Image 1 (cartoon, rainbow, N blue to C red):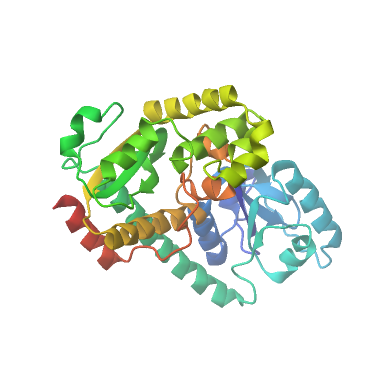
Image 2: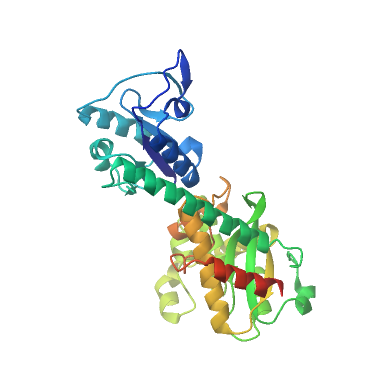
Length: 357
């Protein structure tokens, strides 16, 4: 799922001779703030200008000065939707429109996953909203960067498989933060999973369930990686793989369709991905209540940033193929706690003390 941002053109333009990049033609404060905000939400190639003359206009397309304002945008809207359907999935992709009603109305009904943050706002109110949103996003981006820097701190040991001989260095109770080879955030290895354990003293055991034991029903992480592999390969066995066969009732339902040899093959591929691609750091948190609370807040912080377009996966990230939209949209190998309360600056300071103590 892509995030596409559409910005309306404005009357204020440079009166240039010849052609200029579309994003450089419009001079109004509203357009400039809309563009800044859009670039916080997605990549430049996914930002388009809604132009009365050029319809759907990429930022880098070179155009001449024009002075066109359509009163009736019915046919204009049909053309824009036609162009948009060529570069986006109108049913699945997230479409954010930063424009007034006259640009929204002709196209809105053709879009399923549409957001209108400026709806109902007058022009001055739009500028104010965008200014505040940009500042808020800058603060959020700083929080995400600080969070990644924290877990890259030299005081923390980065573990890779095999790690069995280092059990004495891993706390008995704590939280693990996982990174994936090829995934980055502002030059740092990107966090792709946050986890902990339920039973007291079981952190090391939980890590072994992900890396060593080769049992998808004991590691939801391993199971999700396997699901993504099956989905990427368009393997119909995905439906069987995702059934929890630890209960006799569920196992009986799919007994005739189970293929142990294929299950073992996918398990080995998933385990190999984890062993080869996933590294982690750990930090000590003694009580279960505190572990779960910190885990939830870190996940929610990362998930919110991903939803707002600040965290982007690489095109090759296996999670892009996950059949669970929560994985692909959050950019995390998780589906729980994504919409919880993110860390406050004060909570981040406390977390930093815990991690580095």
